[in-house]
Image (cartoon, rainbow, N blue to C red; front, side, top):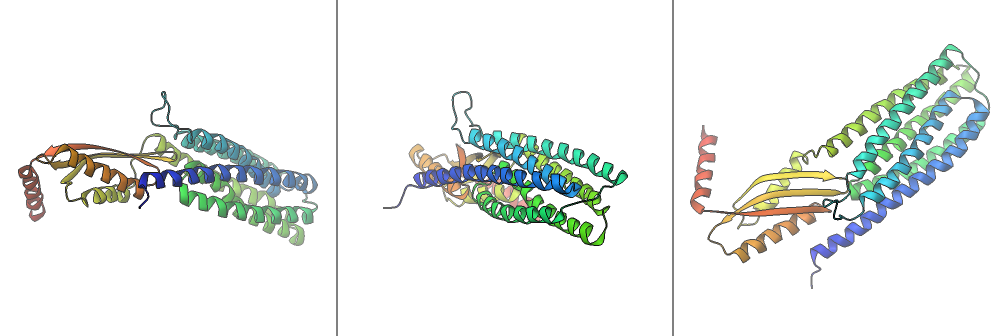
Amino acid sequence: MAEDPVKRLTRGRTKDDTLRKAATYASSGVAIVLIAAKLVAWFASDSVALFSSLIDSLLDLGASLVTLLAVRHALMPADREHRFGHGKAEPLAALAQSGFIAGSAVLLTFEALDRILEPRAVEHTELALSVMVLSILLTVALVMFQSYVIRRTQSLAIGADSVHYKADLFANTGVIATLVAVSYFDAPILDPIFGLGIAVYMLTGAWQIGSEAYQMLMDRELPDEDRARIRDLALAFPAVLGVHDLRTRRSGPDTFIQMHLDFNGALSLNHVHSVADAVEKELMEAFPGAEVFVHEDPVSIADVDKQAGDADKGTEQ
């Protein structure tokens, strides 16, 4: 006997929720380890590049904790005061993260400019290099896990959190190159210059994260290809004569799909209702975690033929 699609989707949603929580715990743990290591190395080396990496890790911890709280809140079921759930906690967290990133980038810019005006030597580069290698190894493992979770859950908050750590991979590699250049080629000016480069990169990431979070908070429609897929899936049922008033939006882990389906007015209510239920289940399988709302509209076959004829005339013209 085939398993009920709704039960299968519910089980899959529970697994996705567990993955979301695990990703937030992992990112917070990695950030704490890296902050401790980089703090020791920065005190020893006095490197601006390393300081920029330390700031980024502090930012990562703050953002990861915000993400942890936001994801836990977003996964709370709908209640009497929040009929559509708590999914918007995720884009709110992502918007806050963009602010953290932008503020840290400004702080880093001032520190780098000060070091350009008053250069200071970078010391104990061996310790700093060891810490950066450790940082890269831990970050690679975390980003791989986050990428898997994002593919499964489409979580905006975890996606924003992952942006920090992906930036870390490039930044930490650059810090290593800077420390080597400073140590072996006596070019201390490269240290603050690279710090400025990281600041620009952080500001770019803040803009991208903030823009995506803003669009979700404003209930932006799903991409055109997703909307076309929804229409095609609904029209694949022979009894469905048309689709109109399609509305879609995402709210954190939740996707909402609302639409009107046209049916032959001569069909029985029981038959129309069963087809509408089948359309809902099909869309729920195609868009895991989606809540689908379908309204059935009765139409006459003559009206459908007339609409089709008008469409053909428009194409010919």
